Length: 142
Image 1: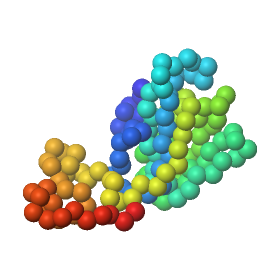
Image 2: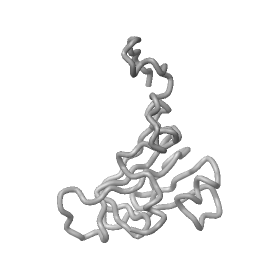
Image 3: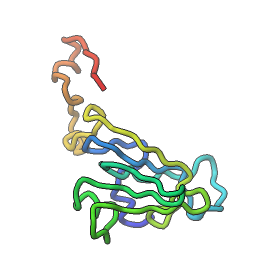
């Protein structure tokens, strides 16, 4: 896997920022490759403004800013990136993915940077006392 893909959040991992994401899964090295079980996990691309499909052959991803675009498409000159569908798989980073999902990830599910650094942090919008059991947990609106 190349350096760009290693630095991106994988399918099943939560990103740092809320928004619309394209999650790639069931990865393989080439479209006809027989994969054991479900293949490898791909990146979670976003946050996006929209995902547009052209004739089931190409996906156009629109990002809100150039910084996010170049994180996933380093040579992009606009705020859009394009992915091709080859033999029923979506190609990204010289890898092919048999499944892809477009999903919205709310702030409540985003990973906070402090939590990644190894420090235990409570989920957003919940008081610190929740973990001590002194208050009742409340439901989060999604």
